[in-house]
Amino acid sequence: MQHLAVAEYNEIWVPRAAVPLIQFGEASRALSSTALNVMGLGDLPSDAVLASYLKCFDHIVSWYGANRPEFRAAMEAVGVPCDFYPALPGSDHSGHATDFFAEQVGARRGLQPRINVIPTEPRDSIVIHPFSGSRRKNWPLDSFRELASTVKTAVEWCAGPEETLGQAKRFDDLADLSSWIAGARLYIGNDSGITHLAAATGVPVLAIFVVTDPEIWAPRGDNATVLRSPTVKQVIEEASRLLG
Image (tube, rainbow, N blue to C red; front, side):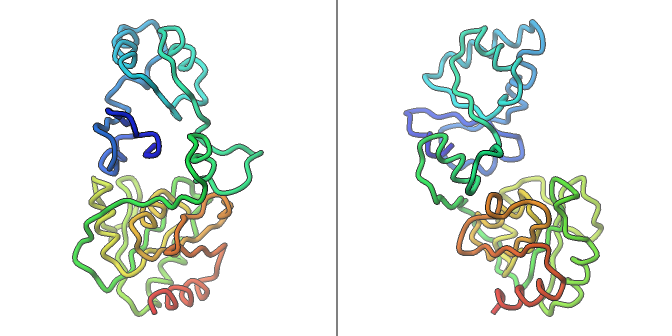
């Protein structure tokens, strides 16, 4: 998206949680505030209002609605031109997901996602986020707990609002979470959005992959290390190496 933001005025619509992370363009809006999610579900007055607003733009690119033919049809019916791109790499794609998205918009391959954060006061700690968007992707929670009880560095846990973990810190704002993670010496987590967020801050990251392919989904950057279905001992050894 940042590669595309070269016009005089650029507006970025993203999930509400991601709005604080947008550091480019002239405006950002939560998708849920735009009525885009109900467009095409019926002959709604909101369709006409939204269409009128969208027609003010010279160029629209969307990863939203890639799997919603009724949405794409509604956009066409009200005369809003839009370039739709697949939201996920298909089975015919080889290589990293970042390159997949970069190629869609003509950006160069090999990009490393980065966000600018103001780190909190540096802490001699390891941040652990033991969850992800799918239980299948999670290294066992008991393994994380064994890891935390074994390493000599202090451990700070974090979790989302709907994730059950009593001792975890929780943040309403992903920008605040990013700054807090960036203040630690090391981050450890599963293949998750928070792990990619941590890598984008520049903090050393140890990502544990269980079922997904790191060749496609690993966080990118010299600060990111990936282990595939490791033992607790292997994670401890790698964490000790990264901590120096």
